[in-house]
Length: 117
View (cartoon, one colour):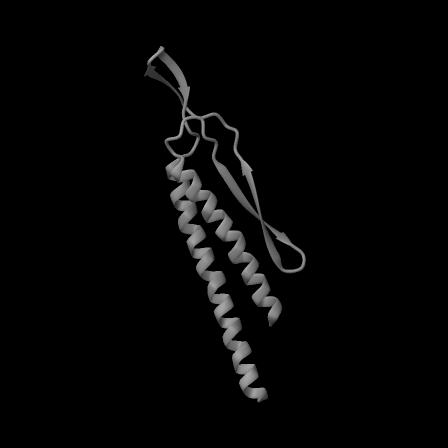
């Protein structure tokens, strides 16, 4: 039973990192030259999940902007809000599922202790 709790807790930690990366990407949506961060989840032995973050180096759109030195070409952020919001919604559901697993495991352990005592 404890291994089930540990697996769910590792899932919660990994999904928390994924949500933090999404939030950071959204916060830097309008930062010139910012490169988005993607977190992928990978299964680890025994029964855990690891969050692997990597910066995506694809270039952002190039835009002409007026500066004090004249008109220059500026690279914008490569973050797409249309990718970030669905990813955050999925992560929220994954977090809820792992949290429910911890709650059920806790209830089962409590019932087992009640039976034994």
